[in-house]
Structure formats: C-alpha cells, structure tokens
Image (cartoon, rainbow, N blue to C red):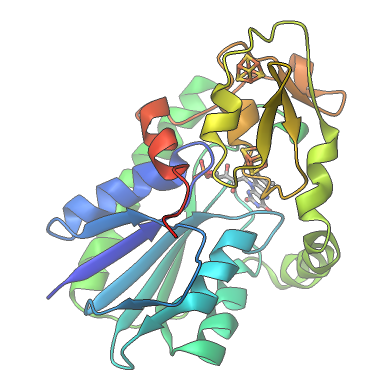
Length: 264
Ligand SMILES: Cc1cc2nc3c(=O)[nH]c(=O)nc-3n(C[C@H](O)[C@H](O)[C@H](O)COP(=O)(O)O)c2cc1C
Ligand code: SF4
Ligand code: SF4
C-alpha cells in the first residue's frame, strides 16, 4: 500500500512530525505542500497532511491545497494538526472542507509541540520543550499503528467553548491575515543577508536596498522572523524580549527547500 504525506511548516515542528511519521509508516513518501497552481491528482492508497494550527484554524495554504487535491473516493485520508495546546475546531474545519470536496477524513489528530507564536511569548523552558518532543514521539508511533490498521475515528477537537469562540475569531482574522505583515519591522542588527526573503514560502519578502520589505501576501507562518540569524526581525513591540524558536532537528536548508517557488 502506498502512503503519501504532504507537509507545511513555519518553524519545523510539522516537518519533524511528518518525518517521524513517514518512518513509522514504512518509508511513506513526503513532500512539501506547495501553493497549488492547478489541481493535484494523488493516486496513493493513504494520503496524510501535516500542518500547524494558525489562529485556531487552518492556514490559508492548507485550504488552498485541499481545494486543489484530488484523490480516489476509497483513499484513506488523515491529518495531523500541530499546535501549542489549542487546536480548537481546526480538524472539524478540515473535515467539512474535505467532505465538500473529495471525501471523508478518516482520522485527525492534534499534536502539541512548543509554540512558535512569538507575539504571545517564547517557546517555553527547554525542559518543557523536551517533554513535548518525547510525548509527541510516543503519539506518532500510536498514530502510525492506527493508520496502518486503517482505523477510522472521530477527529480531535478542543472544548466546545473554545471551538465556538475561537472559530468566530478565526473567521474575522482570516480575511486580513495576508496584511498582518505590516507589523513586521527590522532592527539595526540586520546584516542584509537576505535569508528572510529566501525562507518565506509565500515569496512575500523582497530585498529593497538590501533590507526586507513585506509585500502583503503573508501566510503568518513566522518563518522569516524565527529563522533570521541576527534575530533582527520584530513583530509589534514585544518580540524584542522573547526567545526565537525553531525545531532543533530542522535546519535552514530544509526550510529553503520548502520555499522554492512552484514550477509553472
Ligand atoms: C500565526 C500563528 C497562529 C497560531 N495559532 C495557534 C492556535 O490557534 N493554537 C495553537 O495551539 N497554536 C497556535 N500557533 C502555534 C503553532 O501552531 C505551533 O507552534 C506549531 O507547532 C508550529 O508548527 P510549525 O513549526 O510546523 O510551523 C500559532 C502559530 C502561528 C505562527
Ligand atoms: S534574515 Fe535577518 S539579518 Fe538577514 S536580511 Fe533578513 S532581517 Fe536582515
Ligand atoms: S512574510 Fe514571514 S510570516 Fe509571512 S509568509 Fe513569509 S515567512 Fe511567513
């Protein structure tokens, strides 16, 4: 049986999970979720998507990807929503989106890893991060077993109050996500290396006079801020004092691979 995984990531958490899952699923194929330019027909028996939760819902890229994904009706579809403890109704949203398009989501799992949402603080102490990585490894093994057995289960979700309240906030925020990059600014540590521009999966950063300029088609993955080697990118007023984060086993080269522009 062939398994195909697609991943989207800002700071490597989802990529790390996807790689571990691919190994557990007997070397499943793994690809980055490119921003779709046309419909994508996938013939695998099992298709899984792994992505971060953004603002209590699906990132714009994941919605676009699902809207262009074509699978056979009998395909076993599953998802891992990587988050910092509040998946809310993200997997229910995915379930609705998939059923409107190509079929049933057979299983959907929440995976908790350190937070990369720096405007609300850093990723937490190292011991807590290590604990989350360890717990995630155990959960990935269990999930892989369930997938290999072809089990169908209710998707993970948050408490009802979070699902209602946060889904409402998601609806309101979603429309303006692409413009949230107006809050980025660069301090005088910038050494003009251009990495922020190269790492952006949305090609949303242009170097003008050797300084980054954001072009308002942002996906809010925070890769630019978190991967800047000088920690020179700030978001609003508070990030100056917060620690940067990316998964310790994911390297810049991985992120540059994801950010390669689509072939037309
Ligand atoms: C814009 C943005 C919004 C986020 N919103 C949520 C959220 O609603 N709930 C949550 O638990 N984590 C949230 N997070 C945290 C990420 O989901 C979490 O850190 C995830 O592991 C990041 O995965 P990645 O490294 O693959 O990008 C958010 C992160 C970003 C950048
Ligand atoms: S990655 Fe950081 S240091 Fe390099 S150009 Fe961008 S802002 Fe400047
Ligand atoms: S500008 Fe930054 S936050 Fe926005 S999509 Fe690009 S890398 Fe992600």
